[in-house]
Image (cartoon, rainbow, N blue to C red):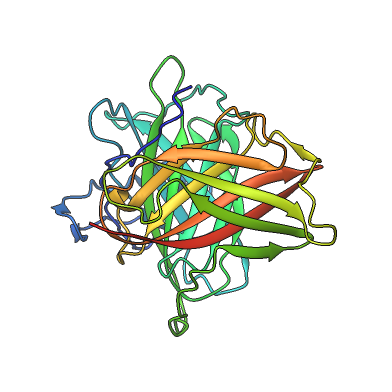
Amino acid sequence: MNKLITAITLTSILALTQACSSLSTIPNAEESKPIVKDNHDDHSNNHEKYSNDNPKTALGKSIAEAKLMTPLNMLPNTIVPLLINVQNLNGEPVKTFETFQEKLMHLIVVSEDLQFFAHLHPDYQDNGQFKVSANFPQAGRYTLFSDYKPAQSPQQISVLKTQVGGESPSATPINFDRTKTFGTAQINLTSSQAHIKANEEVTLTFDLKDSGTNQPLTDLQPYLGEKGHLVIIKKSPPLTASDYIHAHALDDGSVGKVAFVTKFPKSGEYKLWGQFNRNGKVVTADFWIHVRD
């Protein structure tokens, strides 16, 4: 597996409307595109009312696209079902998928202000449809990165958008601390460069220790087949595909340390979420970093 994963250039379009209705042209931060008419028969078996978010998928070797359906008028702190329908570029359901990183689909969900993060694994239903339950803790816009691999095809990433009703929370100051405690794990983030610069390769290392003994963690286990996973998103609302980076851990033997190699395409503030499996429990460690020109 390639250990250097850089930003994946994608485009996305947000369309929020009532289920079983025609969708209109909705502009986003990058471009405006027409949205095809929704087919009423496709949703006749759904017992809940859904809104329909229709994105574009990856440029280049894109052979599929995902469409997000959510209940209408979603409220914060309410568990809701999400439906993701995967189609080929002719609008036909993609029916078979390959397992990668131990799952058929990985879904990264973040709020627009990057205060909320979730890594979900939707269950495959049938006929190209995945379903997962989600709980959005605050009002506002959310971006979902759907990662899947149709059978005998390249891995695909679709960028989806949705919104939760209510008053959005006020902005939270950015905390650039490099050492934090998550449960009983104290984690220190270091970089191979004193000052991280855009478009330059950098190694990011998470040093995990027991917060009580200050000794390296010895109970780390593979998480989805690897030593850890790292998601990085640039603070740039409204979020777009160019703000997203997904990296995989290096095969390093250091006890309690997990390293990733990546590049940042632009200067600015980025938030990182490193995920590690500590004896069966996933620890998610979040940090902010600044990238210079």
